[in-house]
View 1 (cartoon, one colour):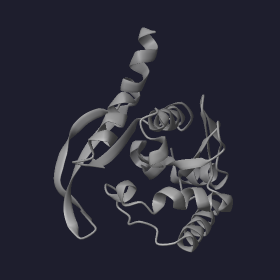
View 2 (cartoon, one colour; view 1 turned 90 degrees about the vertical axis):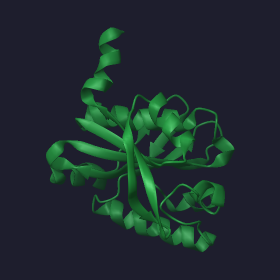
View 3 (cartoon, rainbow, N blue to C red; view 1 turned 45 degrees about the horizontal axis):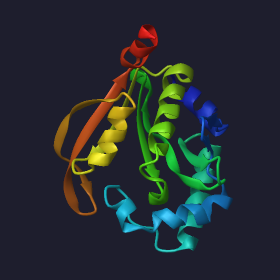
Length: 195
């Protein structure tokens, strides 16, 4: 997929659906729900960003991301729980590599919704969109080495562990070992062929 195509798609952010979730663009009304989890150290422990210091900071962050949507340069979806209407996290693409039809995905979820299958449902929805609509060939996800729960989500969704890159990223002043899991179109289509 060409970069121009990505800009066209994400400047008119699609809405995706699964059994229990809607994935849509971030909106100003999501600020309180986002701040509820983005301020927690247990959430940001394995992320590249620090806790949000205030609700005002979260509002400014969402305002900035809204401007990035307009120009097709932000690819993250708000994850909305259909049961209670709350925005419970984000899931989407952190980067694209258009010449190679490849993408990287990322996700974060409010701890009140951990261990209930929501992360896998959101990631599976993004993978389906990546392979079936965007026609990506490869999708990968990265995690800090100690974040076993995130790796488990990746593997449950069909991403295969590829290895640990030692000292790959400088995060919050420390060089971190980063694990990579990935799924190719062939991996994604294999279960469909068998069923």
